[in-house]
Image (cartoon, rainbow, N blue to C red):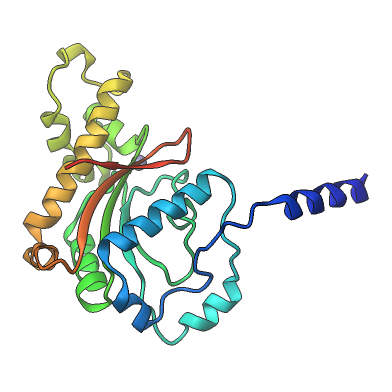
Length: 232
Ligand SMILES: [Zn+2]
C-alpha cells in the first residue's frame, strides 16, 4: 500500500507543470532596489495564484535562513488581522526575508503599526504597503455588535468608523448576523485604513507621491484562499 502511495506521488510530481518561476531566495539589497512597487504587487498576486492553485514554488528554508542572517531586504509590508486562517506568507507563497508582517485583530493601524510600516519602507526599503482584511472577520463582527471586553473594547473603537460609514441597512440588520452588512464593513474598514495610513503618516504619503511605494487594500477569501484588491 505504502509503495503504491509513493508511486502515485511520483507520478503526480513528474506530471506537475513546470511553470513556476518564483524566486527561491529572498531579494538581495540590489534586487530590492531594482523592484518597482507595481512589480512587487504583481509578484504577490502571482504568489497568491500559486497558493490558490496548490502549487507553491519550491522553497528551501535553510538556504533562506543563511541568505538573510546578516541582513534583510523585504519587498512589502502586509498589515493583516491575527486570524489563524490567514497565514500571510503562505497566502502569498512567500518565504523568509520576503515580507514584513504586522498583525493585529481587525488590521487596524495603531501608532506602533504606523512606526513599523515607516521603518519597513523608509529605512528597510519595502516598496509596497498592503492592508489585508478578510472574510468573516471576528474583530469586525465584534465592532458591528458593539462588544465590550477588556482591552478589546478600545481596539474595536478603531473599527467603529467603518461600521458607521456603511449605510443603507435598517438598524435591526446592522449586526454580525447580517453577512452582507459584515462583509461591507470589512471592505470599508480596509479602505479607511488605507486612507488613514496616508493621513496619519506624512512620511508614507510623501513616499507614495514620489513613486517610491504604493499603498493598497485587499481582501482574503476564507473559502477560496484568493486575495482581491479593494478599489480605493
Ligand atoms: Zn479578522
